[in-house]
Length: 243
Length: 126
Length: 78
Image (cartoon, rainbow over all chains, first blue to last red; front, side, top):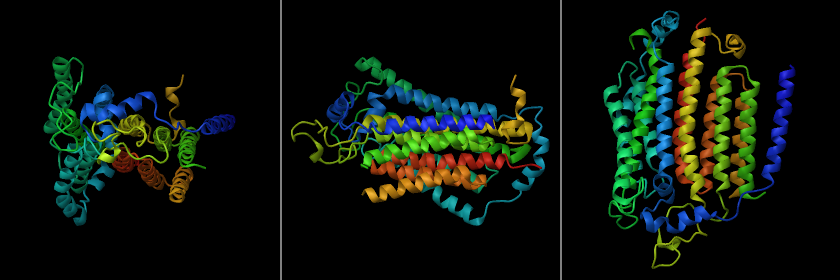
């Protein structure tokens, strides 16, 4: 009781602090760093999407760190949910799991999944290949591809995802990202450099913006396979002992 | 109330609601839901700081957004700030990874104790 | 225009408050997905289409599915 009263008082203090912060408003002009990225972004990178050139080129190291954090979290989930030898819930849960397992997915889900899988993966690939031209990019396309794999998993619970292929895809994409950065270091003098390595081309075309589409395709494949592996790991325990 | 202040205020209210849910609930799953709401509020807050009314998205698709027709310099007073958008992109993906890890812990704790009430985990205190 | 923005903000905050106070956890998870969807619309109005796509694809879809999987694995065995 005392604890909850103290918590409510704390929340009221935080609300007062937020009221004071909200009265200050938001800045009305671009900061100096953003101004430089906007003014010189198109001629330095030749990519129409300025947010993509910020994410992949100007702040490329942050994207590399973010891909690493996602990999670590998926590894953590797989570790926490692993099957142990002295596992109690393998015996306690097997009755409920067996009941769940015996009900297959409805015909609508199965047919819909079979029809939609191809177009969804194609759509996701379209999004991350055109990341430097239109809104989109690696993360969005990877999420769409992971949703397609989720549909496959929901339609057929007993289907095993090709784990060897997915882990190879994930590792090779991450490795490819670092290799592209090192190529930039070797050729043009800075990690993940874009200007001196590959001819930049004209803007608003598919083959432009130097290495940005290459990096974003690798990021899209990595994020897609990682999120699909995450969904599979979290669902796998429901299949009981034989899953 | 201008457009920018509306977004800022609703983001702060969302953070407050998420924080209240994470602190005042006893069910583990509801605590993680509170963190998810708070995460969404923080993303909205960062993106609303970069918003400037009357300007458009930083995607250059026709030559009218260039400063002058000869060079490729972009007119910086026509676009919103692209840097907070890049930060929020990263933050959303990391947020879903952290939420998945929290939920994995919740599932393991439920398998060990059989309940989701936070009062049942007293063995971790000393 | 600002009227639709204000309506979406009100719906978003109402959905968040109802998600905190409602009794059924399943409804709370779906309402958090609704909050993510409203936030994706607001991102679009703020001139951030990349962020809106990411929030709709990851926040509204995958995060909700992860919560539902966790709920299914913590349903009472008794």
